[in-house]
Image (cartoon, rainbow, N blue to C red; front, side, top):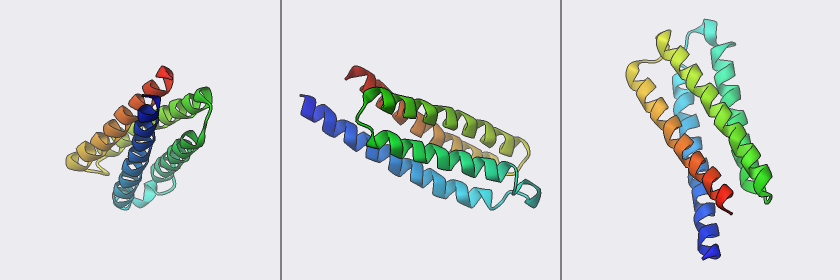
Length: 125
C-alpha cells in the first residue's frame, strides 16, 4: 500500500511540474503584449514570481524530509497567491483581455489544487 502511495505521489509531482511549465510558456506569450512602461515593473515581477515558484517546486520534489517539503510547497502557495494579484492588475489595466484572464486564472487554480493535494499527501505520511 505504501509503495502505491509513493508511486502516485511521484506521478502527481511530475504532473504539477509539467503543468507549471505549460503555464509559464502561456504567460510568456501574454507578457509580450504588456506596454513598454510595464516591462521593468509588472512584467519583471511576474517573471520573477513564476521562476521562484518553479524553483521551489523543484526543491520540494527533491526533498526527503516531509517538513522541509511542506515548507517549500507552502512557499509555492504564497508565490501563486502573488501571481493571482499580478494577473488581476494586468486585466484591470487592460494589458490582457478577459479570455486571457480566465485561461491564466484557470491554470493557476489548477496548479493550486494539485499543490494542495501534494501538501495533503505529505501531511498524511
